[in-house]
Length: 451
Image 1: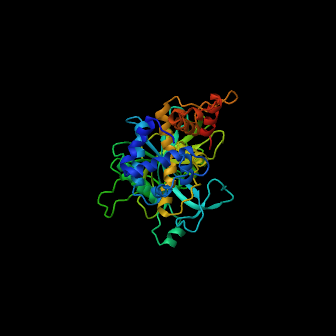
Image 2: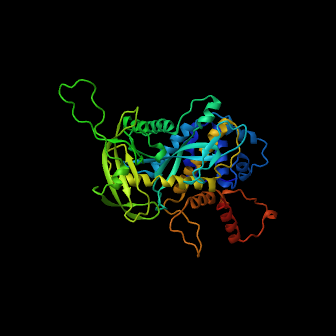
Image 3: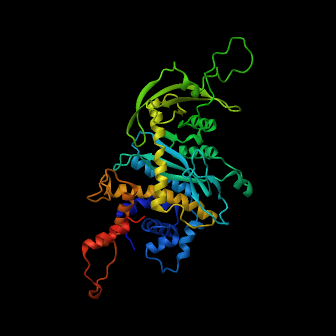
């Protein structure tokens, strides 16, 4: 059975307060087994990876997820605190990315499953739907010392039902915007003294979420896409003296962003931004501070940024920030960070088997998927504690990697768990055999890099 190093034991001991002593010991066994196993991430595969395939107490490990008393919210708070302490400098903004991912699941006993649009297989002309569970995931955007690309480290995930599933179960249906309002309030309570930036795609662009971020004790800066036909208004002028009635909430209607693209008199400016994986790119932009209004809702103040490419390399797009003093370049830079959470979703599926678990009880499902997402962040923390900026990379003479990836971090943690001195070896002479050391190292490396 693997014996983890003191750095990993010390890191994971921070979560011991959330469990009873027996549950914590079994939970750590599942954590190590999930890291070491490949293919499907089930309780059985984790026990086999830990050498417990013949254990008669396998049911106690299943009950860690289905019956044991512990709070995923408490674990999320602890994980976020460790991530901020390890990767976010004091005084720097805490950038949180929010997005959804679909876990394909079938089965009559899975109550919360529903039909959702598959963003991976859908195109502009054809929309594909998939049966499964939809998870709203919050991830911390950080700079890791072994990669030039920022990483998105998940720390919180909640299931969001479809309207049809909620009606079938006779439960109240929360939209992803309503969930976002609730989640950002929780995170703000966990980090009350830190500057928080929330970044989401266009599906989160809602006035109620902007209002929620602006009304918090320490206002959250919310960045998202803005529709080109959004209703923007000027600020209301002073109330005429002697005029009776309520004070107007908005001024005159401003031109739509789509019309500004066609206006030849628009004063376009240029700036350089780090554009996804293409490096620095020169773009043209318009910006302004306006009131965004929709029928039945109070208008909210925001700064909008309208972008276009001089070489027409991408379609014009608009973004906004709920804090009007933020610069246009900073708004675009924050929004581009959102792309990293998509990379995280792909890595969690490829290297941690997200979607391959086979639990069917409600509590186990609600715990297992968030735990796998959180394990991505936990492995990154382990690799950082073990190697710091000198994370070893998987490379050969014909393949040189400039930056380390999650597969390198996972392999580094596995190699620490699989080190030969961590295992008890037999001391009897008849058990000794000659085995080439280079071949043994190759076998261990092969196991460590298995997906």
